[in-house]
Image: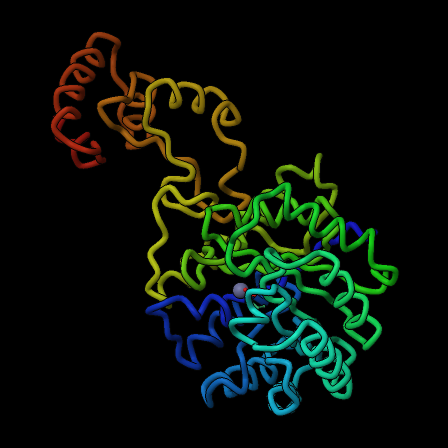
Length: 380
Ligand code: KIV
Ligand code: ZN
């Protein structure tokens, strides 16, 4: 099994499905260029048949970006696939992503098909897509709630029909890590031709487990992760790209896999996507949040100032942040205050410093944060 995990970014497709987000063509190109710089392997640029705007964005990224595979989503319908193929035509490397539901819930309530009819429709769609490209991904929507024997059957047949990547979406964010692990492992072990395809994790965050589920899928042998920047997406969102990439990097002792991403581009990418989509990143968001490398309590500040690794497992420089930050609050101690004063050029005798520290604590009790201007006034 390969030790490379492919990063399939769907910020511009599933991410753009976030309520309230609408990106212009120029904005999509700006994000696409940044994703290429970040080093993702595949960009899902849109759903070409869904609107002229989506067709144009897939077509534009297929024309402009040369170092990444461009992918277009389709339903399992001939017309969708033909339109996607047309949009993708200029791409140096193109992928068609087709498929349909596998859970009884989706078959009965949404597709109104029997299992057999859905299987036949899926196989036909894969054969059709293969006329346009050798790179065909098949999604089994709502795999997380589907009958396992049926999932195995679908995987076997769509691989026979020519699918090269099999997407196993937990569309509703229903599964938990151990369950998603066994879903992927079960497919790999029970489907006779599973060695002919790459398995892909596509998780949603309805119960806050998208990242954990995706990582469990990688542990089980999946070698592609479908993610969005800042975890944006339908409802509670998709798996966050930055979380998975950094978890694989920081815990390579356990996962033993790599991605080809330039992690120093993670924060610039996160900021760009937040600015263009208007989706604010919570301050305490893992990896890219404003507080992710900030320390405010005296005990933590003392530790970090002596040795960063006491309270930080990620070097902020590795993700493109400037440095760790010491934030002065009522919980800060002498070490933190001395450090911040030194940063702006002040050093004092022990006696004088104690006076300033006493005044600092009084001021800090009245404010959320004591900033540089406050420090200058205190000293004066
Ligand atoms: O969540 C999902 O099932 C999807 C598919 C369309 C891939 O986004
Ligand atoms: Zn999805």
